[in-house]
Image (cartoon, rainbow, N blue to C red; front, side):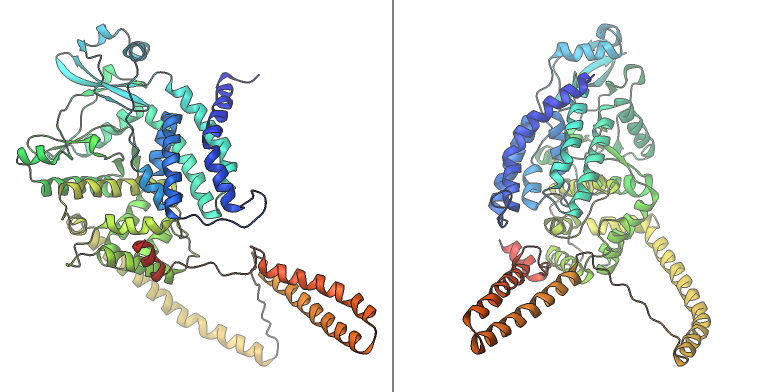
Length: 556
């Protein structure tokens, strides 16, 4: 018997398919102009932007799950072209709150009667999002903020996640192998993230961990959890007011040093990602506030992440390589993280990175910004063999959003100097140098050992050659059947040449009828040879990304 959840998922699949059909139809025609045959169509930037706007409207129409999906997609330049990233980045998770009576039912199902658990409760919410809403209340004389999960949202989300999972095979048809990898990762990551975000007990645990990590830092304030008034659907925290971090006029009126504020924020995120391995992953201005003394307040830990030690080490290596303008070092880190395919053309990638860094520099070589570098790379990541593993998407999102907030506070904000100073103060640069020296020492030792092992092997090989007992075996990888197509073309070419010569001789020295008998199969073979060169899957070099077309795209 079909479960109620599956019935809902089937109905949602129909609704989602109807909403996305115009886009899918357009993408299908991009591959084959007449759907099942015909050449593909080239799509210009303005058309992509129009489609991105349509996608934005579609996501808003489909509700909470797809709003969250759109926000996640806006951080994935390995999946979507730059035009889509720019449009979807405007997507804000702000929706009208649920009716108070519905929200009250959630509280009473989770905790009990509102009047018994709270001294007072403001029925007007102070914020509304796709998965929950926040109200002010009082507990034992203390003012608190109560986050309530949106009524019945879990069933809708689970149905939508099934729809997304069912839709993946269809979407795979429109994208290449590299983006298929990223899309599968995105689907898994999204399902995990949105389920975690609906579990307020997990959010409370992450909030407590991060609060403990900043216990000795007076520049950071994280609200305390009221455990006795919290559960999986309700999270009660102390209410900590503040000025929105992007309210520049209010900050200036309060006499707050915005450069120092940006530095504090950047160092806080460096500490979370590099030192602690647990970080607040939704740093948009609505989740950051500033108190009168310049203390930064963090709100909403529903989207938070963890970084394993390997990724922490590689993030440090990346920052140091960027600071040192070490292009090869950046590429090595990207390959080790799994972000860049090992088979990528390093020369082309190095040119792109070098140009991105050069274009992002100011008059002073140290004042270029990582956000601009990342922005340049994100604009080209759709064309490159880039992939974003699950454990890096949130880190990339945090890096770009935090940088944007810092630049809003101080247009001349110098991320590289802040990051370099932080890494030096915490001993990471020295540690990296010691690790490189240790690795170099091991390589030197291996080289010395090889000096003793190689000569006997070389002498043995030379002896075998001298005795004519040396065999060389080579395996040629031809995953694209290149040699097979070349062999077919060679055979067809020989047949056409032979048929043409035979036709000419028969026509000259025999009868026209006998020449016609030979010319028909010759023409057929000639047509097959012609088709082998004109088919879309013929042997054609894929255009590489170069300095010239990067500049041309920037000019456009």
